[in-house]
Amino acid sequence: MHSRLARDRYFNDFFRYISNSGQFSKTRQFIQHGDTSVYSHCVAVAYVSLWFSYRLHLSVSKQSLLMGAFLHDYFLYDWHEKSDWHKWHGFSHPFRAAGNARRIFHIGKRERQIIESHMWPLTFRHVPSCREAVIVCLADKYCAVVESMF
Image (cartoon, rainbow, N blue to C red):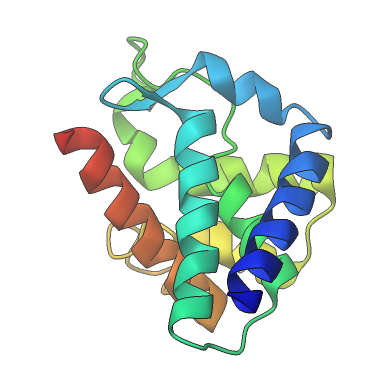
């Protein structure tokens, strides 16, 4: 029970920080999967990522894990709009999100790697290379499937 309380407290504190910083709330206006907003998707990926790390007793940087998870889709545009470059969204949005996160949140190298590799294997040259990146990549796939199906 103690670890669950600690996990939820840590998550809620980090969530407040992200929600009150930058333009994270702007992600509420964009749809990600089905009828799920980018905002809700990122919150779910962050929560599932932290849950995985606790459940599997993995030694990770919780700060890097949550920063990368919350900002993995911080691309700040509606990819459903008709545009030639939007058809490449799946391949390009991790790098747009990482650029926005670097500029607005001043993320470090590990967080950038988490964000840029979350679409692997689609972005085949950007393989998750740390535990946090693997966790976010898996959590993102899990949440995307759940959001698309239900």
